[in-house]
Image 1: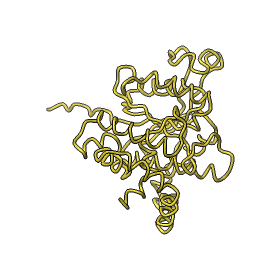
Image 2 (image 1 turned 180 degrees about the horizontal axis):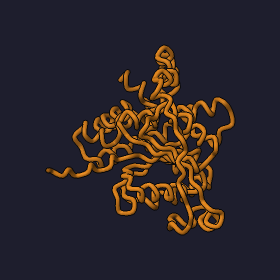
Image 3 (image 1 turned 180 degrees about the vertical axis):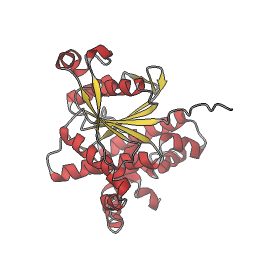
Image 4 (image 1 turned 90 degrees about the horizontal axis):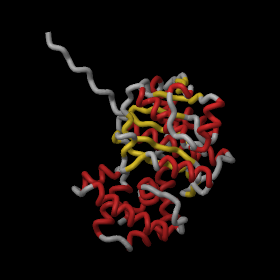
Length: 295
């Protein structure tokens, strides 16, 4: 009789909401790793980094991930700002803001599920509205392998770790992840996913409006780029991640990141963005998707 080696755990992605308490993310990640989960990437959902507490929390969190490693394990850290019409929201004050936030969260989760990712979602950080929106999205676009988590931190521990004063705890500190019952209604009724996506009928008009607003800025950036930088921009605008861009163009990931840095530097000039405000390849995809069809 031949003994079969148990299959390695399927890599998973942690999505967490962030406010002013960065330790929420490391506590959740440590707890999941202790359970034997293989978390290969972490996505942080947050409101504008113009808020000093949110910016400080993000910077504190970045210090825990060095060169895409966390505690000696390969694990990427990425962040996704909540935006409306290309501008980061500093709060969710209206139905229009909530709809825009829903769309950002939906697009992230749909992209990750399309890649076959298993998701863990920690909703204990940041605005309560973000937690509600994440819960709403995952019930539509999640499946039976995904998990939704709330974190309980005893008051005595909370006072000690507040604002990232302590980024890791021991079992004696009493921090616990609590599984939130999750019914993935979209898996039962796929029509719900169709209804929650932008309608195809409205998509051409949406792209025309987006192009009309961004075309001069996109053109300004495009004209400042080398042919290879344009190839990288085009690949990002078509929805590829950095590793996929590297594979398509047969270049190293570090070269992709060098080109991306140049592209985003030109975007900061064209859009008059604050110099210290982080942007990533998603900004390129959001603003150049329609533009590249005409060049």
